[in-house]
Image 1 (tube, rainbow, N blue to C red):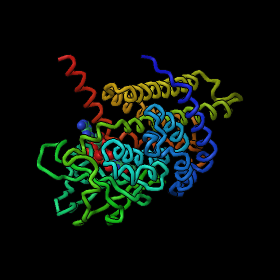
Image 2 (cartoon, rainbow, N blue to C red):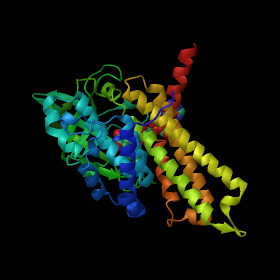
Image 3 (spheres, protein in one colour):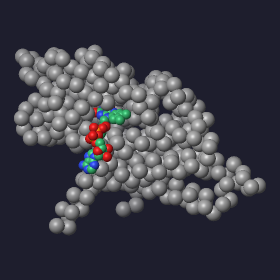
Length: 377
Ligand SMILES: Cc1cc2nc3c(=O)[nH]c(=O)nc-3n(C[C@H](O)[C@H](O)[C@H](O)COP(=O)(O)OP(=O)(O)OC[C@H]3O[C@@H](n4cnc5c(N)ncnc54)[C@H](O)[C@@H]3O)c2cc1C
């Protein structure tokens, strides 16, 4: 079914594009080169309550849907993927709190989360829980009015800025995805173990952190006991990952088009060559396909339709478009593309993360393939 953004969604996209152009693009390379957290930008996003974009207005959010989230995320990521990443990892936790939190948790946290004054990080992955989260080893044991948490979390993005880490721990022996419970744990309860030196996403470092017999009151339990992992599938925030891919795929296409029309060799712009035009056509086709399938997945989620297959398709299409477009754009820049003087090398480094984070693409291929086989069995 064709999908067309509403006037309100188009206006929001324009606002996000203006913000990204004015506030993020001028500093994006610098943030990357210096691995500097985009503190001012995140505060400005909070002032607009975009950190609560999809939260209900009744709790301080903007009450927008996942199409709006995908549009805003594309614009932010076209300027700086890590900015879009920091916003969305936080908003994913806020969304779970809005949908599965107690009234007291919603009252206490959501308004301040929408303003990015209380910052949340995601503590899901572990050393032995990567693409397969059934390997979660962190445990939470009942202790009076609360729980004792012991274990570690790996790759916690935004940990340094976070007030809360949404921490997934085993609370029972039920087979996965059961037996896992989520807790909103104060970041101060963790010990920093290490911070990785990553290829891309450099302004928002990922950390390994540990918990040793940390007491967490039951009022910090997010959702039902044993249902934490299942609750994750009730929110469609994951669309932010393909949306970030769309942003990079578009930025790479634009950079390639600008460079090849400016740069002359043998007396003519590179873009006068048929081979270069075909490359630009491929860059455009990939970006537009990625955007279409991403918005379709978001639209299905907004309409309350099943979005599993659409989301897997979007994740694969958009994240691979981001890598391919960034790679081809770098090639079309020649030597200068291989330097830090241009943004295309950053696009390529940032894009690569998207095929791994949010679950490696192999897992999404598995899920999509399994659904097709099931349908035709
Ligand atoms: C920079 C960064 C930031 C991150 N931020 C967060 C965060 O904030 N919070 C959080 O909880 N996690 C975060 N993650 C973790 C991320 O979600 C995991 O890295 C991801 O789920 C993959 O897990 P893994 O790295 O252990 O890879 P593995 O599970 O070890 O997989 C490695 C590779 O094996 C292959 N593979 C895996 N499964 C299959 C399969 N079924 N079929 C065929 N091949 C397969 C794929 O090529 C895959 O890339 C982050 C990761 C990075 C690198």
